[in-house]
Length: 170
Image 1 (tube, helix red, strand yellow):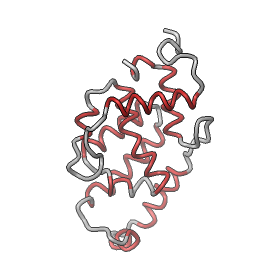
Image 2 (tube, rainbow, N blue to C red):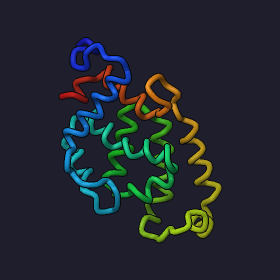
Image 3 (cartoon, rainbow, N blue to C red):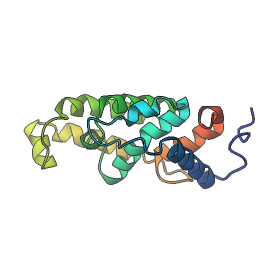
Image 4 (spheres, one colour):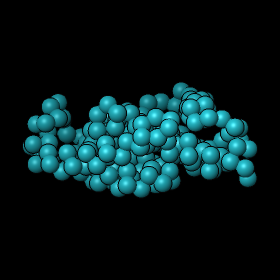
């Protein structure tokens, strides 16, 4: 199958926008990804494998931009969504980032129900400052620096869509 048979001969920015449009259409009014009672992971489960990977990794990209990979679990810690996000990173061949995500999940998921009004105090209370800082630095260093955006995740979406359009646009 020609890589452009579904995506057309689009540049990377156009292809990324097409992916966002498909995600918006397929997950329209499906609920919020925030919190521990999110049901959006169940909606994502019905998407084609590549589109599911993209949907599941979108919020992680936002977390890496605005906060950190460890803080991500304070907002998006629903266990099914966490599992889909790690699987999505692996599907997109972002293996090093998937390893960081897995390590962060092992630390943060058991603490998900604890109040963390002050993030620094929370980490100090659990003796996690150095470990969390190291994981966050590793994840931030994977910024990608690609053509579409500095987002390693969105660059992986474009690459994946070109290689496996049937797994995204089916």
